[in-house]
Length: 288
Image (cartoon, rainbow, N blue to C red; front, side):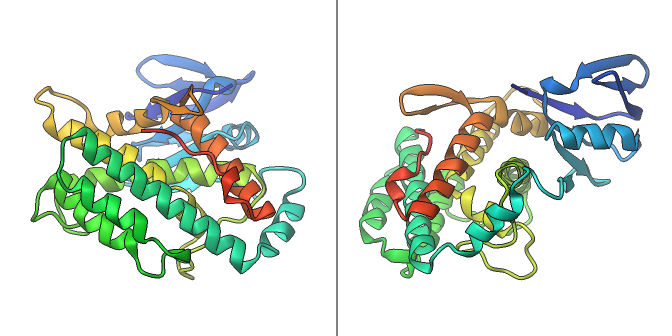
């Protein structure tokens, strides 16, 4: 099983040789492709061969390209992640509105439950407000408990003046972490054979990743927790590399320890099972 998150920060040439990714820079390094889960190319001065790009795709490596500001900008994804992808797409098109609404309601509940737990862990009194919102959730979250919870939650974590969307350091870290998380969900959804554009609640025609935006919601809390930890740390650390490494952190699912990467796979497959059986009890999410 692949497990490495590889970050390329300096000028070099990346190429393929005998099942290895070879990095030729000031020194030459090589890593077997089977070990690489995510390849983050931070520098725009990196040259990469098409042979390596093809092999990375075949090995379902999550490849992320950054812009000149070192922020995630694009992702390498295969046209289809499995041999029966067209069959999966047909099933996806047949998901009933009732099943999609029920699953989205369950996802929102999972998200707010983990927000509530994080506030509890940090001794925030606002946790009780989120507990109340959990009891008020209706089908498809038509009362927008998710939005109300988000405002209370972020103000509790980062201060009463904090707002998502403002241009500040905390939001830049959150956006970076969410981008890394989104890329992992994109890769998993494609590997399962489903279309990223056809979402449950996210239906923006300009968003190519609607389904991933739906499914990743409960996992955003892992990024929030890490950003809060980084902001409280007084040590000299590389913020972005710490956020990338979230994918290798451990979480608990059904009393067993898994990496976040493995947990995303288990969770996504369980959501697809719930959609196809109209049984939200099939959904398996991590415990915070």
